[in-house]
Amino acid sequence: MGDARKIGPNAAGRMLRADLRRARESIGLTQAQVAGHLKWSLSKMMRIERGDVGISTADLRALCEVLELGPAVADELVRRARSARERGWWHEFRGDIGPGYATLIGLEAEADRMIHFDCTVVSGLLQTAGYAEALQSSFLDEPDPQWVARRVALRLRRQQEVHARLDPPTLSVVLDESVLYRRIGSREIMAEQIRRLAEYARRPHLEIRVLPFESTEYRTDPFVLLGDGAGDMVYVESTIGDALFDDDATVQDFRKRFAALSAAALDAERTGQLLHRVADGYAAGADPRPWLWD
Image 1: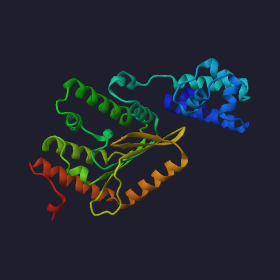
Image 2 (image 1 turned 180 degrees about the vertical axis):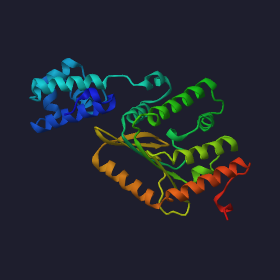
Image 3 (image 1 turned 30 degrees about the vertical axis):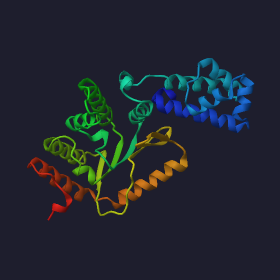
Image 4 (image 1 turned 90 degrees about the vertical axis):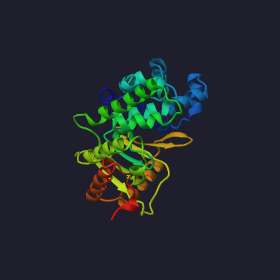
C-alpha cells in the first residue's frame, strides 16, 4: 500500500475500496458475514465496497478488526479514507454538474495518462471558449446566459488543471472526421477551434489523430480511458447517460477499441494537413466538406 497523502481523493477512494475487498476475500469472508460481525446491514457493506457511500473513521477501524488488519495497516487506511473525503476544485461547480461528470473531472485531475475518442464534437479538454459557449448554448432553446457562462468556466478550468501542470498527463485523442465539419457556432469559431487543435497537436504530451470517413473502423459513443496510481477506468458518454467502468475486462476491451481506431486514423502529418486545410476553409468564409477536396 502506498502513501495516501500523495494521491488525490478519487484514487484514494478506489485504492481504499480495493484494499478492503482484497482483505475480506483473503480471509474467506463474504460481505454478508462481515456485515453480520459488525451488525451492519448487507446493503451498507455493499455500498461501502462499491464506493456509493463513504466510511467513518470509527466504522473503518471496526472493519479493520474484523478483517484482521493490524494497527499500522488500519492507520494507513484511515489516512486514505481522509484523503478520499477531500474536496476537489470542482466542488464549487457542484450545482451545475451531475455525479458522473464530477467523477470524470476528479479522475482527470489525478490521471497521468488519458485516451479520448470523440465522434460528435471536439473533446472538452480541447475546446476553445467560443466553441464551448456555442455548444453549451445549443443544448437549450432559450439558454440562461449565466448557466452557459458557468459551464464554459468549468470547461476552461478543466483544461487549465490538465494542460498547465508541470508534468501534464499524456493525452491521445482520436476525432472522427465528421467533428471537423459539424458547425458549432460561426465559421470564425470553427476556424479558431480547428486551429487550436492543430496547435495542441504540436505539444509534447498530446497526440491528435483524425479518423477519416473512408475508415471501416467506427464507434457510435465517445469514451475516455484514464489511468492513475489506482489503475485504469473507462468513462462512456451516451444518449441514455454516463457510465464508469473499472473492471479489467471492460478496460481491456476499450483499450483494444482505441488501438483499432488509432491504427485506422490518419498519421500525425496528414492529420495536421487536414486540420490546417479545414481551418483555412472556415476562415475564408466557406463550409469545408470532404468531397470538395482536390
